[in-house]
Image 1 (cartoon, one colour):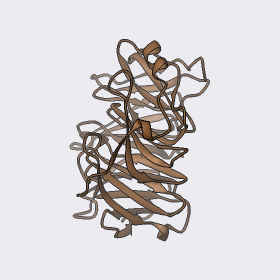
Image 2 (cartoon, one colour; image 1 turned 45 degrees about the horizontal axis):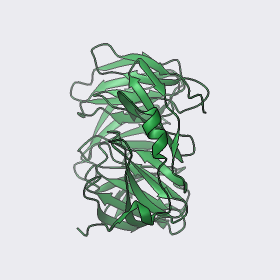
Image 3 (cartoon, one colour; image 1 turned 90 degrees about the horizontal axis):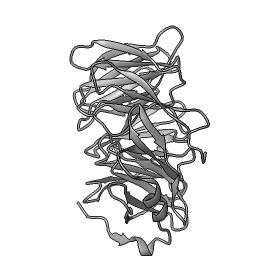
Length: 319
């Protein structure tokens, strides 16, 4: 594949606020959380159950569509001034920026379960660009026309090999191959989806039946397996896989988190006493953020030991 051109940060017209990083980040870092409009990140300092939010770190030139890698080692964003996509190295103090030969206006972005691939949507041209080899060796895998959607794109999910993208609209869930071929997900009324790490297996939720399913080898064998049902009148609002792909985590709007063993089908549940907005990985083998930054504490699921627990991160004083 053709390698993406790398341009140093001096050409971006934007630089990270390194002094904030040097002052506020010391000791263990649980991860980074984008703010509500995806223009900055908050570092989370500490460990599960004993952590706090640091001061927001932003780009001087402004960015949009900022998303953090599930492994918390880099972020993907699009510069407001140049509309150029960039990778922001979060793995060491000082941060460095690598610009990509990828331009997007009114962008949306998604990273794969390990951060190895990305999908960037250009709202003006209605084109979807897929990148692989992240973060060390970025490569362009596809540039597809998705104007066939016919309605606004709500969310995306991309497989780690960059070969498949799930595209959610108000009425339909599409699967797109990197070749440009697209089809509707083969479930009666799918709503949203997520890929498991290093696989083409996808978790699909269905609001109509209040259920979640696993499609093994999406676009290939398409083996369908039932995973879980939300209680009462609840629906699943988010899905994710554990780092090893052995468990599927499902967030319900009732405030319950369902944890399903993929091999055995065994299901456990834990109440978060919150309204989950997503299942976003933080550092650790099975640590997930469930809510967004606000004036309320952020709920975190720590499933890294035998007894899963919900812990809280106090809200940022600067929010």
